[in-house]
Length: 167
Image: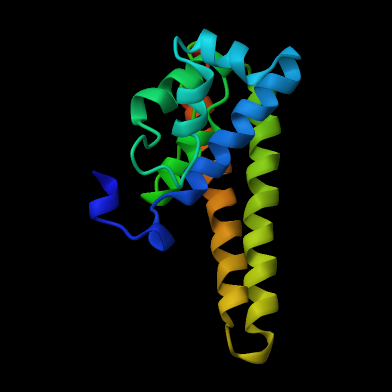
């Protein structure tokens, strides 16, 4: 079990639990329901769901199966985004429909804004020729946001209808 590997003060993936709480809470608010309704929709009991969402309950940890069930039920994939960030990966929904050129235009503007934010934060951090731990975290956060914006743009371009122009 997990409690034989980790002490209670070094529980892994606390961010995953926090995001699972947010996703479930947002779903409950949107549906105007209580936790017992969510548990029922997940084919479990309120007590089991409470235990699985409790990072300190090492006897019944939040499983990948439960994470997938929560994501499918809510349509909210922020938990998977947090899991991905733990491995320095990006989670981007796969688009099935063909994108429009206007969508590409919007995403290229968004990617440009995010890339400019990286430039701005790095330049500010380098003003005194020293990067502090706080500045480093700000830079990494902006880079992650820019990577996500660029990946979304790439995905959209891959799904954009290409027109053949004959000469």
